[in-house]
Amino acid sequence: MSYGKISILCAVFILAVTGTTITNSCTHQSYVLPANMRTGDPNICFERDVLPIFQSNCAKSGCHTAESHKGGYILDTYQDVVKKGIVPGNPAASKIWESISMKIFDVEVMPVGAPALSASELSVIREWIATGAIDSGACYTNLCDTNAFTYSGTIANIMQLHCTGCHNSASAAGGSLADYNDVMNAAVNGRMIGDISHLAGYNAMPSGGTILEECEITQIKKWVAAGAPDN
Image (cartoon, rainbow, N blue to C red):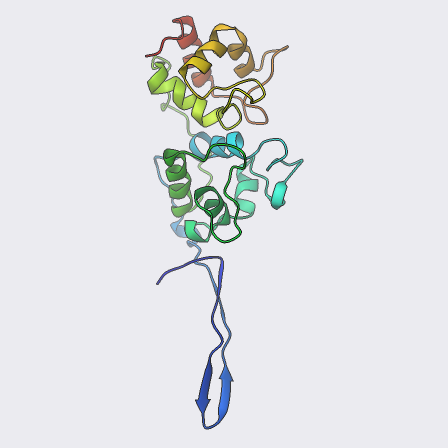
């Protein structure tokens, strides 16, 4: 059985039985994974892997923040993300998934005016929904290594997850963080560490999001201290 959109209207059909017209109209509710089956994917942590994608790409000024709540969606906390547009266990019936992954009928592709989410970001969100869309809480313990701070292996991933939703072009406020040269320039001018550490006199980044984990900040500091190499 295939579960499609949130509601699928059955077509009205006519049966001629001894001259009687029988009309049948029914509405099927989309499948929702039972609560006791929402175990989640052990490799996906909502706070670490999913929420930053929404905060960086969707919960921006004029879009899906508590202040603007465009379309009635707020995508800055777990409670708000699952409140509307997420059907646990059923990505195909989740309007948020539909909006970020494809254009169907009058559904607008998200995020608007910014690059589409990467294949890896979409995969994480789809798997999170499919396994129950649970709040796995803070699950950073032993998953971050402060001695791992190469650009390709660590720094670029942090930028993509937390920053490039806003800083995706040179015309973006604060400039771009979309490639190595952009990130290196931001690092050597001295503002990046102050911004991500939320120091007084700096712009707290990610804007509107939670501060990076201490381990991630340490990784960036070590990379900058090493000369911000393209490694």
